[in-house]
Structure formats: C-alpha cells, structure tokens
Image (cartoon, rainbow, N blue to C red; front, side, top):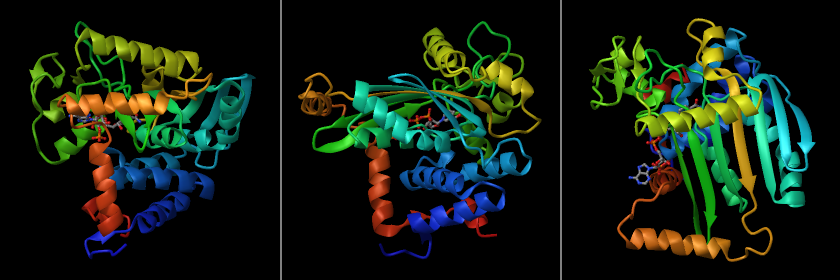
Length: 334
Ligand code: NDP
C-alpha cells in the first residue's frame, strides 16, 4: 500500500489506538481487539463508531468505570448455549475469548447462542457479524446499548436505547451481505457528529424536552429524545432487543444502567445477544448459491445498493491509498 500524506495505513492506525488504550489501563489483548474494531469502522467509513469512539473508551478506562483488563467467565449452559459474564470488561474482547467455545457449539450442533452480560459495547455490530459470515455462518446480534435516548410515541421520557440490530450472511462467490442499524431514526453517534458540525436533522428524527418535534440535535440530545424507526413497530423491535439483550442475557436493561452510570459516562455496562447458525447444516448445501440468486434478483429488480457495498468500496480504497486522516485521528498523536 502506498500511503499518501493525508492518509494512514490500517496497521498504523491500529497501533496508535492500541497505544492509547494500553496507556489508559487496557490489557494488550483487550487493546488489540478494541483498536482493531475502531480502525475497522474508520477504514470502512462507519465514522460514528471509528476513532471518534476512542475518547469514550479512554474515559471509561481512566475513571475505572470499565475494566480494561477483565477476563470473561464463559459458561457452557447447553450444547448450543454460551453465557458470558464479561466482568465489567468490553464486549468484543469477551466475545473473542469465547471463540473456541462458539466454534465447538457450531461444530456439535450447528447453532451458537451467545449471551453476554456485564459487558460494555461501544461500537458497531457489523465487524463481528461479518467475521462470522466470512467463516460461512449466518449471524445476528443485538444490544441493549445503555443510553436512554429513544422516546416512543406516547412516552413522556426516553425508555429505550438506540438498540442496534445486525445481520450477516455469507453469499456464494461474493462478499457477505452485512447490515447493522440502530432501531431509532438516527444513531446517537450520528446525532453527536451532526451536533458537532452545527447541522440540523430532518423533522421526525426526534423531540425536544417538551415532546415537540425539533430539527435541532442539541434539543434532542439535551433533555429530548430520538424517535424509533417506523413508529410503534420500531418501538416494539426495541422492546424485543432489550428483552433478549438484557432480560435473557441477565445484563442490565437500558433503563437500569443509565440510572446507575456516573455522570458523563460514555460506555455502558449492559448485555448483548448473538445467534450464529451454520446454514448448511442438515444437508442444506444449496444455501450459499440460493442466497446469491436472491441477492442477484434484488439487484436485477433495481435494488442495486446492497448493505455492505459502501463499506466494501471504502475498504478497497483504503487498501489502495490508506485511510483518510481526520482531526480525530490526528489527535491520537497529540
Ligand atoms: P446506517 O443507517 O448507517 O446503516 C444501516 C445499514 O443499512 C448499513 O448496513 C448500511 O450498509 C445499510 N444501508 C444504508 N443505506 C442503504 C440502502 N440505500 N440500501 C441498502 N442498504 C443500505 O445505520 P445507523 O446509523 O442506524 O447505525 C450505525 C451504526 O451504529 C451501526 O453499526 C450500529 O451497530 C451502531 N450503533 C451502536 C450502538 C452501540 O451502543 N454499540 C448503538 C447504536 C448504533 P453500508 O454499511 O454499506 O452503508
């Protein structure tokens, strides 16, 4: 890769983030996983969950709110069912620690249900989901993300987090299809970015502290709330995600954790649920080709923008030219 002056290589970016995290108390194993995750988001253009997030990780580490050296407790509670207590560490390193048990469950039964609790998840879901799909698995994930931010119609205060849901599937002779979105009209990270840029948001994105529609990100973030996607249907998806990612895992519901977190905390100790399936199990050998046919049909019908297309294009450009250096990346070297 040839690096242009205003670009940085993926490996150099990982190293710079790793150095910051270890200096703030993360173990080298945890720093590696989190730095790779942040750099992956930055490289693929998920800027709301890229280097922008490093300051929040550092804050949680330095104030002792999250344990950057935690080692997860991994319980195999059924042939396909893995319960993980992250012991106040971060979710992705806990998931990575459980990879041997996940592989075993998939090999024995074709299914792994992975329930994490007591874990901080401060990133996008897609990097982990894509990784399962690259191993030939179908995967989905969801998070009780911990920040009370979403006000469904009828409620007078935020009751849900932005509760992201992600899905990934392998596709024959193509990159996996991976999508991952908050079940709110806009993710909290994107709103913060727009606020920082002084921009407005479309009507319907959220409400101010009196419950009135507003286009001002400040009013939504400071005392107001974000609307769910699709009215009551998005609210019910949030209900399901909180129930599975917090209730089922044994982690905290968003309404519990946000009340407990110290003022200004960035990461939240919540729960996450992943379900990973071997799609060819039981003789379903045609799965990959059939999904390829399905995706081809969608493109042929005019749905030519598929989830992942934007990220894979950014990734290819970064491989060629490096990752664009933003002020946020520059601040890693201050
Ligand atoms: P986006 O709207 O950015 O993207 C949603 C998904 O839809 C992406 O997979 C995207 O693919 C795909 N997509 C976008 N436009 C189209 C289109 N026209 N046709 C088909 N597919 C399309 O999601 P959000 O802003 O809601 O969420 C951003 C990230 O924030 C997510 O990764 C989520 O996990 C994360 N998040 C994390 C939280 C946490 O607590 N950890 C809380 C809330 C959100 P592509 O990637 O190719 O653009």
